[in-house]
Length: 232
Ligand code: DX5
Ligand code: ZN
Image (cartoon, rainbow, N blue to C red):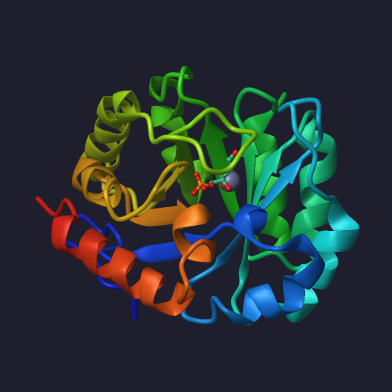
Protein backbone atom coordinates (compact mmCIF):
# COMPACT_ATOMS: atom_id res chain seq x y z
CA UNK A 1 0.00 0.00 0.00
CA UNK A 2 1.41 3.43 -0.82
CA UNK A 3 2.51 5.46 2.15
CA UNK A 4 0.67 8.72 2.69
CA UNK A 5 1.79 11.63 4.79
CA UNK A 6 -0.66 13.75 6.76
CA UNK A 7 -1.52 15.71 3.61
CA UNK A 8 -2.30 12.64 1.58
CA UNK A 9 0.93 12.81 -0.39
CA UNK A 10 2.32 9.51 -1.51
CA UNK A 11 5.49 8.94 0.47
CA UNK A 12 6.71 6.28 -1.95
CA UNK A 13 9.74 6.56 -4.19
CA UNK A 14 9.70 5.39 -7.78
CA UNK A 15 12.74 4.67 -9.93
CA UNK A 16 11.94 4.60 -13.66
CA UNK A 17 14.87 3.67 -15.91
CA UNK A 18 14.77 5.29 -19.33
CA UNK A 19 15.25 2.89 -22.22
CA UNK A 20 16.68 5.73 -24.28
CA UNK A 21 19.98 4.52 -22.80
CA UNK A 22 19.27 0.85 -23.64
CA UNK A 23 20.45 -1.13 -26.65
CA UNK A 24 17.47 -0.77 -29.00
CA UNK A 25 18.22 -3.94 -30.97
CA UNK A 26 18.26 -6.02 -27.79
CA UNK A 27 15.22 -4.48 -26.16
CA UNK A 28 13.87 -7.71 -24.70
CA UNK A 29 17.03 -8.52 -22.76
CA UNK A 30 17.49 -4.86 -21.80
CA UNK A 31 13.98 -4.81 -20.30
CA UNK A 32 14.74 -7.98 -18.35
CA UNK A 33 17.65 -6.16 -16.67
CA UNK A 34 15.34 -3.63 -14.97
CA UNK A 35 12.78 -5.93 -13.36
CA UNK A 36 13.55 -4.21 -10.03
CA UNK A 37 12.30 -0.86 -11.35
CA UNK A 38 8.85 0.59 -10.67
CA UNK A 39 8.14 1.58 -14.28
CA UNK A 40 10.09 1.63 -17.52
CA UNK A 41 10.36 5.18 -18.88
CA UNK A 42 9.72 5.22 -22.63
CA UNK A 43 10.88 8.34 -24.48
CA UNK A 44 8.92 9.00 -27.67
CA UNK A 45 10.51 11.73 -29.82
CA UNK A 46 9.24 12.97 -33.17
CA UNK A 47 12.15 15.04 -34.54
CA UNK A 48 9.85 18.05 -34.39
CA UNK A 49 9.10 18.95 -30.78
CA UNK A 50 12.68 17.86 -30.06
CA UNK A 51 15.59 17.49 -32.52
CA UNK A 52 15.78 13.72 -32.12
CA UNK A 53 13.79 10.70 -33.23
CA UNK A 54 13.12 7.46 -31.37
CA UNK A 55 10.04 5.36 -32.08
CA UNK A 56 6.26 5.44 -32.17
CA UNK A 57 3.27 3.35 -31.12
CA UNK A 58 4.30 0.16 -32.90
CA UNK A 59 7.50 -0.13 -30.90
CA UNK A 60 5.82 0.97 -27.68
CA UNK A 61 3.25 -1.78 -28.15
CA UNK A 62 6.05 -4.37 -28.33
CA UNK A 63 7.70 -2.90 -25.25
CA UNK A 64 4.35 -3.09 -23.48
CA UNK A 65 4.07 -6.78 -24.40
CA UNK A 66 7.61 -7.55 -23.24
CA UNK A 67 8.32 -5.36 -20.22
CA UNK A 68 8.36 -6.88 -16.72
CA UNK A 69 7.19 -3.53 -15.29
CA UNK A 70 4.48 -1.03 -16.33
CA UNK A 71 5.19 1.67 -18.91
CA UNK A 72 5.74 5.35 -18.13
CA UNK A 73 5.51 6.97 -21.56
CA UNK A 74 7.10 10.41 -22.03
CA UNK A 75 5.87 12.02 -25.23
CA UNK A 76 8.26 14.61 -26.63
CA UNK A 77 6.06 15.18 -29.64
CA UNK A 78 4.06 17.89 -31.31
CA UNK A 79 0.27 17.69 -31.24
CA UNK A 80 -0.14 15.36 -28.24
CA UNK A 81 -3.87 16.22 -28.29
CA UNK A 82 -4.03 14.01 -31.33
CA UNK A 83 -1.49 11.27 -30.53
CA UNK A 84 -1.34 10.77 -26.75
CA UNK A 85 -4.62 8.81 -26.32
CA UNK A 86 -3.27 6.08 -28.63
CA UNK A 87 -0.48 5.35 -26.14
CA UNK A 88 -2.99 5.03 -23.32
CA UNK A 89 -5.07 2.70 -25.47
CA UNK A 90 -2.18 0.32 -26.01
CA UNK A 91 -1.91 -0.11 -22.26
CA UNK A 92 0.71 2.34 -20.96
CA UNK A 93 0.29 2.84 -17.22
CA UNK A 94 1.07 6.54 -17.54
CA UNK A 95 1.21 8.92 -20.46
CA UNK A 96 2.98 12.27 -20.06
CA UNK A 97 2.78 14.99 -22.70
CA UNK A 98 4.49 18.38 -22.80
CA UNK A 99 2.58 21.43 -21.63
CA UNK A 100 4.39 23.47 -24.30
CA UNK A 101 2.98 21.24 -27.05
CA UNK A 102 -0.61 20.71 -25.92
CA UNK A 103 -3.57 22.78 -27.06
CA UNK A 104 -6.04 21.65 -24.40
CA UNK A 105 -4.05 20.01 -21.61
CA UNK A 106 -6.93 19.53 -19.19
CA UNK A 107 -9.23 17.94 -21.77
CA UNK A 108 -6.38 15.70 -22.89
CA UNK A 109 -5.63 14.61 -19.31
CA UNK A 110 -9.27 13.72 -18.88
CA UNK A 111 -9.21 11.56 -22.00
CA UNK A 112 -6.08 9.76 -20.80
CA UNK A 113 -7.70 9.02 -17.45
CA UNK A 114 -10.91 7.86 -19.12
CA UNK A 115 -8.89 5.34 -21.10
CA UNK A 116 -7.32 4.13 -17.84
CA UNK A 117 -3.85 5.69 -17.83
CA UNK A 118 -2.31 8.03 -15.31
CA UNK A 119 -2.23 11.49 -16.87
CA UNK A 120 1.08 13.34 -16.81
CA UNK A 121 2.25 16.75 -17.92
CA UNK A 122 5.89 17.75 -18.47
CA UNK A 123 7.59 21.14 -18.45
CA UNK A 124 10.92 22.05 -20.04
CA UNK A 125 13.54 23.79 -17.88
CA UNK A 126 12.47 27.31 -18.94
CA UNK A 127 8.72 26.74 -18.54
CA UNK A 128 7.25 28.09 -15.29
CA UNK A 129 5.25 25.74 -13.07
CA UNK A 130 2.89 28.34 -11.64
CA UNK A 131 0.43 27.76 -14.48
CA UNK A 132 -0.01 24.20 -13.20
CA UNK A 133 -1.01 25.16 -9.67
CA UNK A 134 -4.70 25.22 -10.45
CA UNK A 135 -4.45 22.02 -12.48
CA UNK A 136 -2.94 19.72 -9.85
CA UNK A 137 -6.15 17.71 -9.52
CA UNK A 138 -6.30 17.18 -13.26
CA UNK A 139 -3.01 15.29 -13.35
CA UNK A 140 -1.59 12.22 -11.67
CA UNK A 141 2.01 13.21 -12.23
CA UNK A 142 4.02 16.28 -13.20
CA UNK A 143 7.41 15.95 -14.84
CA UNK A 144 9.92 18.73 -14.22
CA UNK A 145 12.61 18.28 -16.86
CA UNK A 146 16.09 18.62 -15.39
CA UNK A 147 17.72 18.83 -18.85
CA UNK A 148 16.51 20.15 -22.18
CA UNK A 149 14.49 17.26 -23.60
CA UNK A 150 15.87 15.41 -26.60
CA UNK A 151 18.95 13.48 -25.55
CA UNK A 152 20.17 11.16 -22.82
CA UNK A 153 23.46 11.58 -21.02
CA UNK A 154 23.22 15.35 -20.45
CA UNK A 155 24.17 17.14 -17.23
CA UNK A 156 21.56 17.75 -14.57
CA UNK A 157 20.47 21.43 -14.36
CA UNK A 158 20.37 22.45 -10.68
CA UNK A 159 18.67 25.73 -11.63
CA UNK A 160 15.43 23.74 -12.09
CA UNK A 161 15.31 22.87 -8.38
CA UNK A 162 13.68 26.09 -7.06
CA UNK A 163 10.83 25.50 -9.51
CA UNK A 164 10.41 21.91 -8.32
CA UNK A 165 10.44 23.11 -4.73
CA UNK A 166 7.69 25.66 -5.43
CA UNK A 167 5.60 22.97 -7.09
CA UNK A 168 6.14 20.53 -4.21
CA UNK A 169 5.23 23.21 -1.65
CA UNK A 170 2.07 24.07 -3.54
CA UNK A 171 1.09 20.40 -3.90
CA UNK A 172 1.57 19.92 -0.18
CA UNK A 173 -0.37 23.07 0.63
CA UNK A 174 -3.30 21.82 -1.44
CA UNK A 175 -3.15 18.27 -0.07
CA UNK A 176 -2.48 16.95 -3.57
CA UNK A 177 -1.24 13.42 -4.09
CA UNK A 178 0.23 14.18 -7.54
CA UNK A 179 3.57 12.45 -8.20
CA UNK A 180 6.48 14.79 -8.92
CA UNK A 181 8.91 13.39 -11.44
CA UNK A 182 12.36 14.52 -12.54
CA UNK A 183 14.09 13.45 -15.74
CA UNK A 184 17.56 14.17 -17.07
CA UNK A 185 21.00 13.74 -15.54
CA UNK A 186 19.65 11.85 -12.52
CA UNK A 187 22.25 9.60 -10.90
CA UNK A 188 24.01 8.91 -7.60
CA UNK A 189 25.45 12.43 -7.44
CA UNK A 190 22.23 14.34 -8.27
CA UNK A 191 19.29 12.32 -6.97
CA UNK A 192 19.65 13.64 -3.41
CA UNK A 193 19.07 17.27 -4.39
CA UNK A 194 16.03 16.36 -6.48
CA UNK A 195 14.59 14.31 -3.59
CA UNK A 196 15.25 17.16 -1.19
CA UNK A 197 13.47 19.58 -3.50
CA UNK A 198 10.39 17.35 -3.45
CA UNK A 199 10.63 14.80 -6.28
CA UNK A 200 9.30 11.30 -5.59
CA UNK A 201 9.61 9.75 -9.06
CA UNK A 202 13.02 9.56 -10.69
CA UNK A 203 13.88 8.82 -14.31
CA UNK A 204 17.42 7.61 -14.91
CA UNK A 205 18.80 6.47 -18.25
CA UNK A 206 22.58 6.27 -18.32
CA UNK A 207 22.86 5.81 -14.55
CA UNK A 208 20.91 2.54 -14.78
CA UNK A 209 21.64 1.09 -18.23
CA UNK A 210 25.26 2.22 -18.09
CA UNK A 211 25.79 0.26 -14.86
CA UNK A 212 27.20 -3.26 -14.96
CA UNK A 213 24.33 -4.36 -12.72
CA UNK A 214 21.18 -2.27 -13.29
CA UNK A 215 19.43 -3.92 -10.33
CA UNK A 216 22.14 -2.68 -7.96
CA UNK A 217 22.03 0.77 -9.56
CA UNK A 218 18.25 0.94 -9.06
CA UNK A 219 18.58 -0.10 -5.41
CA UNK A 220 21.31 2.50 -4.84
CA UNK A 221 19.24 5.29 -6.37
CA UNK A 222 16.21 4.23 -4.34
CA UNK A 223 18.18 4.29 -1.10
CA UNK A 224 19.68 7.74 -1.81
CA UNK A 225 16.29 9.17 -2.71
CA UNK A 226 14.64 7.72 0.41
CA UNK A 227 17.38 9.15 2.59
CA UNK A 228 16.92 12.65 1.20
CA UNK A 229 13.20 12.61 0.59
CA UNK A 230 11.57 15.86 1.56
CA UNK A 231 8.99 14.95 4.20
CA UNK A 232 8.16 18.08 6.18
C1 DX5 B 1 15.68 13.24 -22.31
C2 DX5 B 1 14.81 12.09 -21.93
C3 DX5 B 1 15.28 11.39 -20.72
C4 DX5 B 1 16.63 10.72 -20.89
C5 DX5 B 1 17.32 10.70 -19.57
O1 DX5 B 1 15.06 14.00 -23.27
O2 DX5 B 1 13.49 12.54 -21.67
O3 DX5 B 1 14.32 10.45 -20.27
O4 DX5 B 1 16.53 9.43 -21.38
O5 DX5 B 1 18.60 10.17 -19.75
P1 DX5 B 1 19.76 10.40 -18.68
O6 DX5 B 1 19.29 9.82 -17.39
O7 DX5 B 1 20.91 9.67 -19.27
O8 DX5 B 1 19.97 11.89 -18.59
ZN1 ZN C 1 12.10 11.20 -20.61
